[in-house]
Image (cartoon, rainbow, N blue to C red; front, side, top):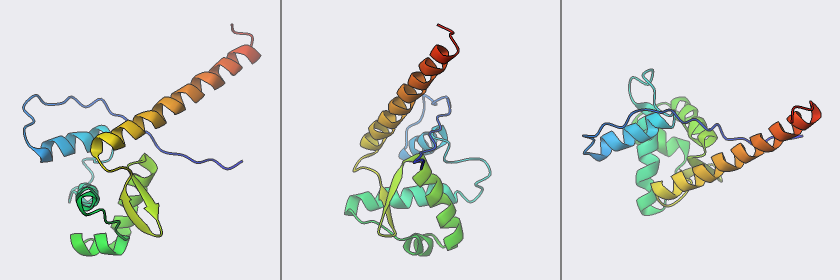
Length: 137
């Protein structure tokens, strides 16, 4: 049996009422999705995320080498963050090129919510079968 997965992480991170600029909003969004952490001192994950987000405007998909060159990061660092963004379901890979999963952030969030709803439905279904087999009804 082969499993396909997305690591769905949601962190209840209080939204500051005075968030007024896009950088604060993007930081909050990424932190709430478990993408950005205090360990990321040079904000490299955030920078990879922003680079891919900016590429939405032109419709371009980028290679890891292109991202590394643009951000002056090692390819290994970029690949590490790309793998996290892929497993979170934020970006997709086609022909060794990476792009955001959908054309807008709202659509990406909508698609991720569908993933979470489907996963939760599957969890409930399996829990019901377990209850039935253990005669816990």
